[in-house]
Image: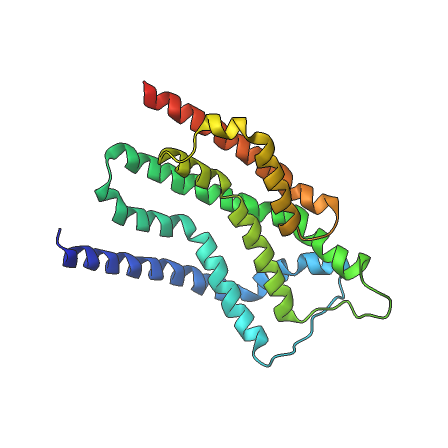
Amino acid sequence: MSLGDHLEELRQRLIYSILVVSVFMIATLYFGSEIHTILIQPYKSVLGPDAHFFQIQLMAPFLIYLKTSFILSVLVSLPFLLYILWGFIAPAVDTRTEKWGKFIILFSTLLFWSGLALCWFTVFENFLRIFLVVLRPDGVDPYLPIDEYYDLFFNLHLVFGASFQLPIVLILLGRIGILSSRFLISRWREAVLIISVVSAVLSPGPDVFSMLMLLVPLSFLFFLSAIIMKVLETTDRK
């Protein structure tokens, strides 16, 4: 294929990606009120069912609907977007690499959603409780501006989702020869120490619980990565 043909195929795949996200955006905008009710549940669980938000900027609610719709649409359509992108790359690789690429897309998506789920079910509400209840001085109104709440919500969840991509990064570095399973296993103490520091920096609160909620799964994913790399290295030798 000529350069022009490659660019045309890339353009078509970008159009497909935009269409996929657009379809999900229409759905999320239609159910915007219901989605908002679900996403503010941690806030109401901490401050009570009568908890409310402040609107500081005139267009804040409207922009939040658009932002929420776009982010959720991208997250839900993530495997489709990655598959569309991989379809552009696949013709340039061999059959074995193509199969591994599809596996990595699925594995990466599951890891990302697992990080989001961990944050939603165990971390985010604890984060709100610490800063809105435990550490709040007397005489301070605990209620947040609506846009600040959603910024905290998405930033924290995306941090956890991105952190759970650790196995993908390690396995890819192993496949290109930069890392090996033997090196990871021999340096596991240093790795756990680095993960502890990263968990302390990224954890939502000053308490040990928040740190452990990121440290434990990341440590598990590190050792899982070493095992997968060992299996792949053994397979390559056969």
